[in-house]
Image (cartoon, rainbow, N blue to C red):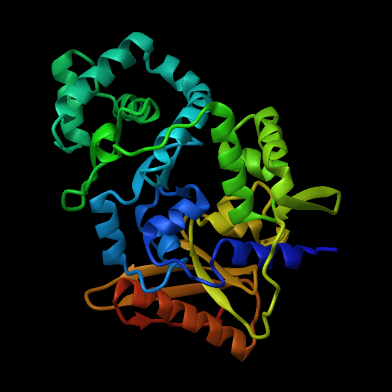
Length: 364
């Protein structure tokens, strides 16, 4: 029978954190289905950590070239998705996101007529491969007679254009994000019938994130419980399930065997799918530390042998990256060394030497 530790370690493997075997950013994103990405810098590290030899610059290049895209999908936040998956994933999950957004649509006096005008104006302005920044899109809408003086109103207008499959991310212009036409950015995007899309999303989730529960899948996908159940039924022959502490966990029929013999640490980004991909994170986070992890002044979490043991944050200086750690408990010399190794892996990603003060010392 599985234990919480088994669940945590199997998730590390199925998410390709333990064994980073992918070669390209799009392969990682395709495997995971979607990667939460409102924190662009953190999302780049989350993808690169699951692949071999991918640097921050290589992630920026993949994003600029459009081999990975960034859009609002599944839940009311940005995710990385692949060009091949963006249309069917939007078609399946956008109605649920719109339902969540309905209150704000009403509050900001946004209705179907305004969205129709807004989408048409944005599509016209972006035609011919003309990526535009958020400010430039605001000017387009203002000229159309659609008020955007409220930054939140502008955000929801663009958000809706993403959900409607009109726009998606373009290449960055300096440090500014741009938007472009989805049909031009992803001309080969797949389309599925709804049941096919539901089955594909279910398969993608439990293959890459199992062991996981129905509630985990509902949380991650944003689907209704009824749809999530239906999706599991469509693909259940490809998965096994086991009851642990009264919860039914689904996982791939073929799972890699555990061979962890020495301390292994990972520095994960704030919204890494290892944690954000599940409603119940208790297999990896001790309840005593859950609130501490959610504090807003930390960059991300430190995972040691599947368990969150602290938090970390970075400061990029002229020629180095300083990584500060806050550990929840005293660790052994070998465990502290594993964290140091993980920190230097992050430095390799940024192509910067790492300064790591106070490893193993808990902040007060």
